[in-house]
Amino acid sequence: MKLSHLLLAASAALLALPVSASVKLSPPTATAKAAPAVRIDPTYWWVGMKNPKLQLLVNAPGIGGSTATLASYPGVTLEGVQKMESPNYLVVNLNIGPDAKPGQLKLDFKGSKKLTYSYELRARNADPQRTQGLTQADFIYMLMPDRFANGDPKNDVVKGTRAPRVARDSMYARHGGDLKGIQNHFAYFKQLGATAIWPTPIIENDMPKASYHGYAVTDCYKIDPRYGTNAEYQQFVKAAHADGLKVVQDIVLNHWGSYHHLFLDKPAADWFHAFPKFTRSNYNAFALNDPYGSKRDYTLFNDGWFDTTMPDVNQGNPLVATYLIQNFLWWVESTGIDGYRIDTYPYSEPKFLMQWGQAIQEEYPKLALFGEAWEGTEAEQAFFAQNIFPPVNGFKSNLPGVLDFQICFAVADALKTENGDLSKLYHALQGDWMYVDATRNVPFLDNHDMSRFYSVIGEDFNKFKTGMAWLLTLRGTPQLYYGTEVLMKNFSNPDGKVREDFPGGWAGDKTNYFVSRPGQAGEAFDYISKLANYRKAHPVLSSGKLMQFIPQDGVYTYFRYNDAGECVMIIANNTKDPKKVDGTRFAERTDGFASGVEVVSGATVSDLKTLNVPAHTAWVLELRK
Image (tube, rainbow, N blue to C red; front, side, top):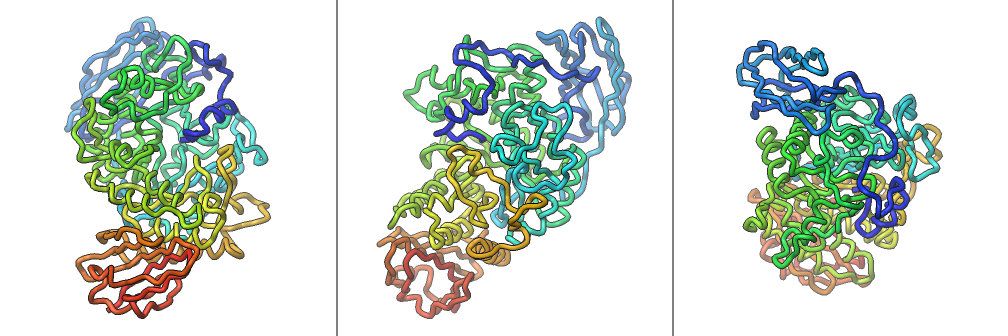
């Protein structure tokens, strides 16, 4: 999410519209843009979907006073219409039977508003490269499109948008990065060893301030024109697949932007949560499963707004729930993306999350799904993934995996001080017993909301390599934040400081890390690249089993191994002094092996029974017989 929990209040003052704590919830003072004569969401649909029911939200002035009829179309039936509180909306319910063919449905509206609309039914795309999902063999590169690379300067400024300027010297303005800029550097991702790209949201965010971050959607069915068009995004995904790269789309279920067309002109007041005066979420997910919790705290967490510019969508309204579910089915079928990263996952209504997850997974069982669950304990994080817990307050998560904040916090705690605490990292993995399958989690070291990893660990390059060794050898699908591989640094105070432009992404940049990476930036890139590409070539590091040993004397050791006899030993000395480690302690995994080769440096460790590990050093050893 664009706001960290700790800095939320401060950031809101910079990013929000002028809404005070006592102002009643109402649309921004700006009016909606001129709408087309008629708009129907979803904008088109497909035959052959597993769920035959289709809810059309029709938006046109005065359409609520009309009735709808469907011209005869084999396999398709009109199941009725539903009037809304607003006279500008009408819901049309269709049933698309299994025998329906692609074509144009003719909808006639008669009454206070008369019009005829041709609605398209398409054939589903059978390309086997589409929607591949993610596995532990993948390595995700996360980036902010506006701050990564500008491939098409012609879309930097789009007439009619509410923030129609580019100012690279402003951390809150648009900088001009786009989909074409990302696509221009597919070779860079592959050289690094990444196999998947995760851009922060690319859906339209036509907000007047700080719209670059993407987490305040204003049109659910449109790519932000500063990034490209819907057709260009479809081509982007296709090109990525052709180049051996997968695409993860970042989405928001819980809230929209306050300039969303459905907020400026609401279908009904109950499409959004409302209070007598502006009310924030309490940002405390513990309220959802606290056996002693109050209803007030539960309601505030789920229904309170995330920020003044982010109205909370009422997913308890069945029409809203269906609108959201259809929208995210639409993006998968339209583009063939490989996964969804779900922003602020715990903030959505629990029953809706179960409904949404079931609908998405039934239609696209291969699609990767992982959510942001920024929580303080292993148990609370596990609560939001598929877990072994019984239902709590009617909620049983069906989300396959989550972003692994516990790993992130534990690595930082281990490395940010001298002789840091290794027990939290051990405990974070020990807590995997709570998951149905913890290998579907996504470990990471930093992101767009957090201080950059290199700064957190005091710009210590040896500690940096230790963190990267852990990231790329632990279970799960690792994620790297853009620029970490070239030692970009800063603290998230404010968060714009960790969202700086990638050097070389713009014509005329004095430094171009896409082409040349001198000094330690090059060493960092090479270290990650060697380890990531080794991981790609040796599945034992992704699909292998994991065995860890309790940290001892500042040294943490674990193994990745498989039934084929392959074994990789990861041993890290997290102290400022060299350590002589008794390797016989690990005989359970090392018996039968005589030596090891450090996979990045190529150095040989000839004695596994006595290991002399230098200060602040991590070895990734391929064991040899």
